[in-house]
Length: 534
Image 1 (cartoon, rainbow, N blue to C red):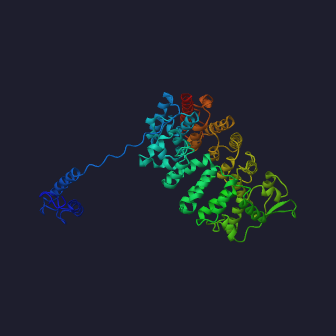
Image 2: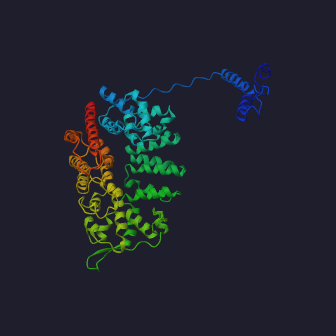
Image 3: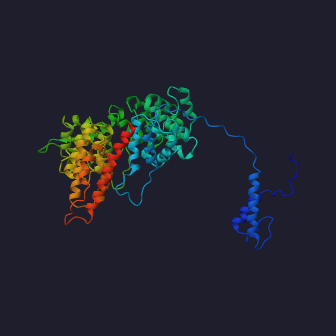
């Protein structure tokens, strides 16, 4: 058949490309094939393009049907109660209102809490809700862990069919590994042959169940991985980090990539018994001493004069950021990486609280205390965190060691939820809400009663002062999501329009009433949501 001439009316080879070229250049510059130049050329071009389009479509050869996908895996969890399923559909369908909600709750902000409650009760997601749920998780990274756990094993099945949901394949969803637990051959095959996103998800999932197996799997291909991939894989070792990881991390200190070396050093410094922690302790202790020659004991600091090769190998970055001195930069990194147990022995057997209270000579106090803050967070040391936070009622609004609200928030994260809430409640009672937003964000939900009462009392004070409620919109939004729904009845007295003082902002009372109405409505809606899931 190869020698059979084409039909007389068959298009010349490349006819479609010629038509496209004529359309791009214009018929005045390029006459379409088979058309006469002149005023009729544009219409002739369109006619020829239409005919060629039909010819191209009709000339397609039928292709073999693709294999049907494997059935979606079963989800053994119990189905949602009907009322809860309807509520989920409403939460997923809600869209932000650019005009303003007035007293209506913001349903989108309640979705994370709803997902957490549904996961805690072990319900399965309705199949018809999965597309909208994955779309929501695609647009909001904060939703992903809870949404994918709720979506269950079918999320990965769907993600392989829709490129928009590929993020599922690189997210540890808490529902188990991409292969069945105990399937050693399947795990090895996926690690060797899977997409990068699938390998990340596999390693994260395996690390949460069997840290040693995950580390051995990573070590088996470590030398052949790309630098950017090694960095992301190494980050998975934060889960279940322990002394058994030290040999692998010590090896990673010699990696070709500086980012990999820095991450390995950070992980090792979180292991107080590691060899790196001991090296950093020796370096940091050489910089800090107790001076007893003064009237009262004080801490003296002699920061490093150089960043040698050993320091660089152990993760010390030699080049400071703009505006930071080299010696201060090196010193802070040494103290941050040194085990906090170094300092009582070095500074006369004092407790952390007594050490933090010591004066520091030559303006090194802020650098030293800031580094101790970072060390307390990295090492999850609650005793040092308490010392650095100080009393919430301190005039300095946070204590001697906490150099910023962000640092205080991180220190609070090392404390138990009840103690955290009590400290923030005391801070609000003393200093008000203006600086409390970051601190509230680290408190467990629902807020403990003392914290809830402190927030409500502070909002009441702000209302009586005559300010506008949008000055506290962030705190009001948190209150809607975090206050215990049982507090709704206590807020009923805030719904009436207050008598406005002469020096109050015009109309502020009405705005406050609307804000409290939205708060009460949201709290009661949260109570109804919890009941539907019970």
